[in-house]
Each structure stands twice: as structure tokens, then as C-alpha cells.
Length: 192
Image (cartoon, rainbow, N blue to C red; front, side, top):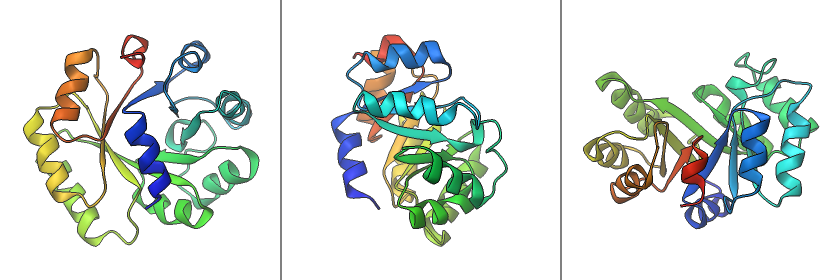
């Protein structure tokens, strides 16, 4: 686990997640110290990351959502490491976490918690995963506090709540339930 990444998350419990250039421009004007990049392609991702780094913020690329990199192969992480200044990656593919670690990239493993099987998968990964991510992100983040507490009990790494975080109440509910931070595409929440 990268302790410096965890420290940065603790300092910045609201993470700006951006899905287009307009959102990126708005996020760069906030106090959010970490930006999750949820868009782009192999031709634009280096420029997107560069804008974030020039603003003095951490850039985390969701490789599953970058056109041309969403092939579930280690080479997509090699591309991120060799052609961008990204600090780390976000993925739903557990097999990419080990290679991210080898490359020195921070890692966020994203889970969609839609049923009890998702909880079983989180527990399996926590107990039997060859390599643990730095943090996991659960979606939707506006889940009942009981679920966040349960995930904290079975995960060996900190939890970020993302998705459907729309207001201060959602942020506080997630944080009070044990999430280390929240990620959201809602600019209204970025300045809380």
C-alpha cells in the first residue's frame, strides 16, 4: 500500500471525478487535490493528465473508460506509465492491480455493489487477492451506511464511496459510515 496516497486521500476527502473537458476545467479551479479521470482516449489522455499535474493535483486514470486502453491487458498500464504523468489508475479489473504496483502506480479497484454477490467478491479479493489495491471504491457511494460498514469490515484496504453522491448529506453519510473519501462528478459537491 502506498501510504503517501492514503495520506493524500485523507487530506482530500472529496475527490473530483471528471467525465469531460468541461468538468475538468471546473475541477481544476477547486481545492480538490485528487482528480479521477473518467474519459479520454489514447490520443488525449496525456494532455488531460498534464493539465491536472500542472495544477498540482494527483491524476488517477480510469483505464477501463479510456478508449483504446480498455482491453484488460498489462500493456494499457505500460502505456499510462510511459506516455503520461499519471499518479495511478482506477479499474474494475483485479488482474491489473499487480502490474500497477510493479510500475509504481497508485491503484483503485472499483466495485459495483448491486447485490450480495458483490460483497462476496470484495471479501474474496480481500482474503485471497494476490495483490491488494491501495484502496477500493464502491459504487454507488450513496448506499446505506450498514453496507459501507460491512465492506470496511471485510476489506483490508480503505474504502472510497463513489457514484450518486449529490449533496453534503451524502458526503457526511458516507464518511460517517467509514468511507475514507467520496468521489463524485457533481461539481456542487467538490467545494464542500
